[in-house]
Image (tube, rainbow, N blue to C red; front, side, top):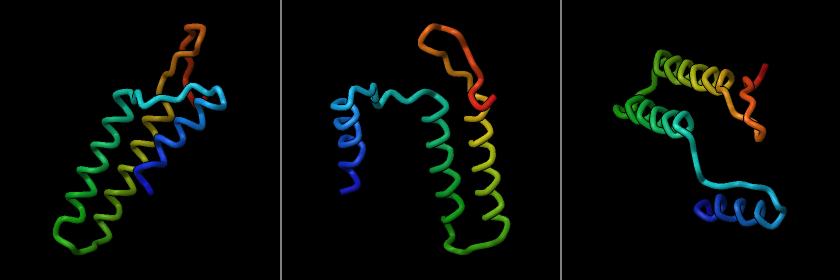
Length: 84
């Protein structure tokens, strides 16, 4: 069921006339890869520790800050800062 959610959302958006594709930019792909690697290393030995939770929390904050200051171009070509 989970594998069909993204394609279903894309088909529904296409029917509604909203442009949605799977063209992820470098920040989205890199943050996904980095979070997978950090979580894999954190869960590798099977024990929990407060420092491991802190590392995951700091990674969440860093990724959120990167998306907050990400410059995205508008449709008319003017660059804006998201969140400002």
